[in-house]
Image 1 (cartoon, rainbow, N blue to C red):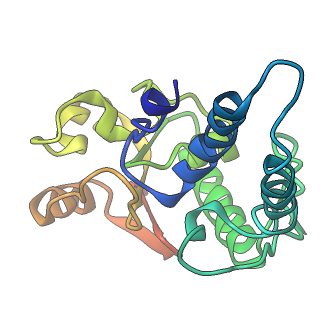
Image 2 (cartoon, rainbow, N blue to C red):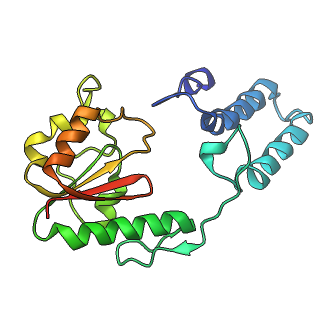
Image 3 (cartoon, rainbow, N blue to C red):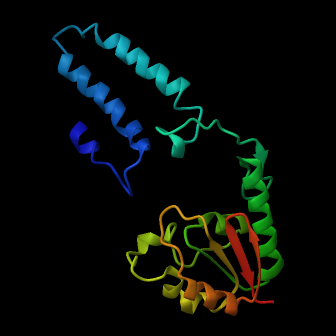
Amino acid sequence: LLAWMSLNQFPFAAPIYFCYVAPLALLAATIASWRPGRLSPALAPWSGGLALFAVLSLNTGYLDALGRFHRPYSLWTPLALPSAHLEVSPPAATTFLSVKNLVEDHIGTGRLVAIPDCPEVYFLVGRYNRSGRIYDFFDGSADRPMAALDEERWREASVFVINHALGFSPSLSEELLKTIRNEFQHGARVGQFEVRWRS
């Protein structure tokens, strides 16, 4: 079981997977040292140390920084939205609220398209993501631009949001960005997002 779980590297290898395997390593050590009627006393310090590490260290920073550097949580600004009673960092709150306001000001009764890899935009404005994808690379077409796959859908949209800070999917090509900007001639850049609209 431990060897099988150590292969858990989806969608990519990252330090966070230490949290998946470390508890199983302790379990494997416990099973290996088990004797009928007693448990090896050598495991007590290790178990206590791992428990303290999990509580005092792993629970104080961001998972994306795990194993590289310590970045304390800074989530204290409420979004104060009907759909999101969440606390985020001050820059994220400013970005999310600005994107939400821009989309709502220009979408009217039209559709929204937000790509690649920005499901939070649909959530913030309470719109349905017609593609059904959370992350665009999941569609299995990494060799084709994501927006090109949705051209029929986004040509009917009123607002187009482009995410320029990608974690998984490939960036949109310059040619495709030019096509989108010609189609949606007005726009504003808000943090990592570019919000485009027709009029």
